[in-house]
Image (cartoon, rainbow, N blue to C red; front, side, top):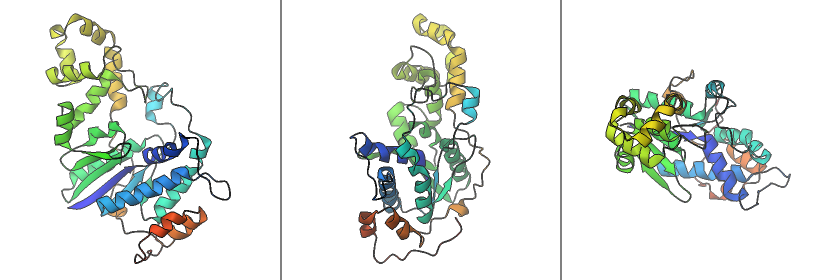
Amino acid sequence: MKKVILIDGNNLLFRSFYATAYSGSILRNSKGFPTNALYGFINMLNKIINEEKPSYMMIAFDKGKTFRHEKYDGYKDGRRETPLELKQQFPVAKEIARTMGIKCFEIDNYEADDIIGTFAKEVDIDDDFIGTIVSSDKDLLQLISKDVEVKLLKTNDYIRMNKQTFYETYGLSPEKMVDLKALMGDASDNIPGVKGIGEKTALNLLHEYGTLDGIYENLDKIRNSIKEKLINDKEKAYFSYELATIYKEVPIDTNLENIKYEGITNKYIPLLEEYEFYSIIKKLDKKEEPKKEQSL
């Protein structure tokens, strides 16, 4: 089987940035350019490559507002603004990833999750491929299938989530992650859900009635306090379901052969030198010869 790695680029960069920024320390090179997110990003990519040994690999990034913002002005409201020092590192991160031989994707009106979902669908269709999604974002758990798993990043480790481990954790099949968020909402994305229903109650309802539709088809069997909340916020529940669903038809080229991973290019080390990542250079396998630059 050919292994495909699908990476949530925004997630990795944010994690890398705040790993040091929370302590008030932002690494900079001698020119004063912030490099802390880049340093962590490169190390995480190298770790992923070493651990997963992918045959195919891509990174997806967000690109501004999306169709969800058009549907809901409040989508992702409440998030603090991305620090300037982090914004400055995004273009460089993409450049470095390309010199590492990794294709990067971003597209107007869609999130990184939708791009990953579209590639994951391609993996599901083609029996020659299996896929691993790398992120700490639980939204992506809805994409788990017989051929696609999620390497769910934690502070110092990760959990490998497949259909079995997802069921052991939630008592549901992975696609029901959308139903769960429709009920309990998601504060990080400002998805409303049903007011007063948290994860425990939402899970109990889904264990009993299967889906969001199943819950609303059986309102007469649900105790009055919860029933009232469900009735009052029915419109919000279904709207939240729509917002939480990852779109899998992003208009991009999903030919998996185009994301074949062939190793670092000859522009990788010069770029590391430019940003003064000498410790990363030292870790490089001396036997590994960078490949000639290809069109990326």
